[in-house]
Image (cartoon, rainbow, N blue to C red; front, side):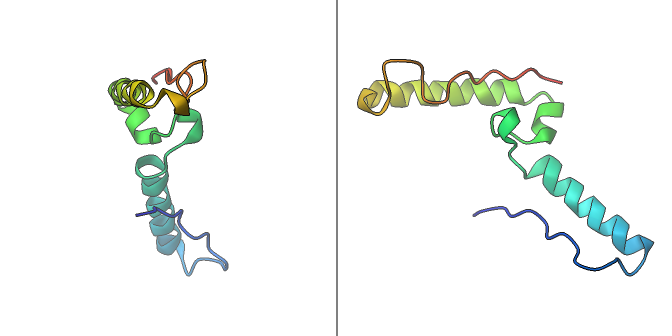
Length: 89
């Protein structure tokens, strides 16, 4: 299932409460569903809670196993993902 970004409003909100609801849903999506490229495809919420280190370590294990099983898919250099380290907040 692909998680899509919320659709940005094409017209003004009906009122303040509508605007608040839209911003709340956008922030939920951005922080908990949006896998950010600069954070190595983890969500900002995971990063802020410090969950990134464990997730990236587990991901690195998977990548290294894949590299061992299919070395022809990888060049002579590092794993295709490069450096998975992300500085936690």
